[in-house]
Length: 389
Image 1 (cartoon, helix red, strand yellow):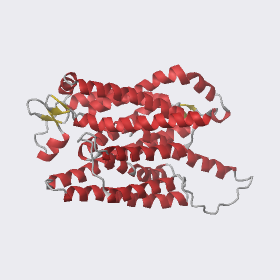
Image 2 (image 1 turned 120 degrees about the horizontal axis):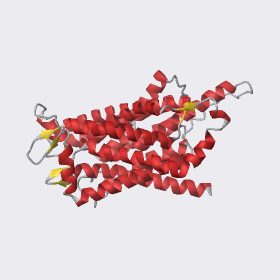
Image 3 (image 1 turned 135 degrees about the horizontal axis):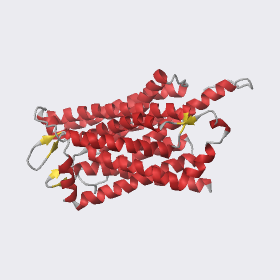
Image 4 (image 1 turned 45 degrees about the vertical axis):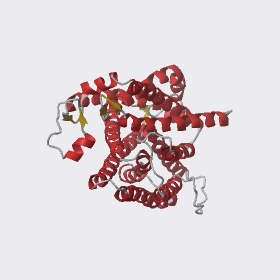
C-alpha cells in the first residue's frame, strides 16, 4: 500500500511541478490589451495565496497528527516556533520568486530550470559557513561536477544566441542578464532554505504551518511593494532593460510594476483568468502532495523527482507542437551539460554512492550518529525547498 501511495504522490508531485513551471512562462508571454502580461509581483501574489491555502489543508487533514507529534519524546525539549520569525524566510521567498520570474523573461524555460541547480552549490557553501554542517566525499565530488554542468548549460545558451541569425548583441546581453538574475534568485532561495533548516532543527513547526504563515507574510509584503512600485517610472533605465524587465501600459508608460493595469489586463483576457485559476489550484495540489510525499518517501525520492521535473520540462519544450513562446531547439552541448548536472546532483545526494570504505560504528559513537542524522535532515530540507522554485 505504501509503495502505491508513494508512486501516486510522486506522479502528482512531478506533474504539478511541471505544470507550475510551464504556466509561469506562459503567463509572461500571454498578451492582453496587445501587451504581454509581465507582472512578476502579480505572479507572486497568486503564489503566496497558494501558500496561504496550506493552512486550510493543515487544519482539515493534519492538525490532529501534528498535536500527537508534539508529545513525542524527541520533541519534548523543543518549543513551537514564534510565528513572527517566519517573516524572514517569507522575505527571502519573495525576493527569490521576484528575481526568478524576471530571469524567466530573459531565458528559455528549460535553461532556467537547469540552471536552478546552482542552488545546490550556494546551499552547500552557506551550510558550511552558517550551520557548520559536515559533508562527506560524495558531497565534495558532486559539487564541482555540478558547477561544470551548470557552466556548460549557460555556455550552450550563450553560444546558441550568438550563432542564431537575426539576433543582435542585445540578445546575448539578455542571456547574461538572465543568468545573473537567476543566480540572485538562487542566492535568496538558498538563504530561505538555510533559515528554514535552522528553525526546523531548533523549533517545532509543521511544514504546512510554515508554508501558510510564510504565505501570509509574503502576500502582504508583496502587495505593498506591488502598489509602491506602480509609482516608480523606468524613464532613466537603459532601453533594453526598460523593454525587457519593466511593465508598459496602454499609454506607453514604463513602470517597475503597474498594479491597476495588471487587473485591467486580467479582466480583458479570459485566457489569463483560466491560467491563473489553474495556477492557483495546481499550487495547492503541489503543496499538499509535497507534504504527503515527505511522510511516505525519503530524500532520494524528492531529489529524483526534482531532476525529473527539469528533464520533462526540457523534453516538453522540444516538442514541435508547443507554442512558439515555449518551443526550443535541441542543443547537444545543453544535453551534455544537463547530463553532467544530474550526475553531480545524484552524487551530492548520495543516490550514486562512491562506495568509499566506511569505518565501523561502535556503540560509543552515538554523537557521530546524531550528527550524521542532522546532515541527512539538512539535505532533506534542501530537497523539499526546491518545491517552491
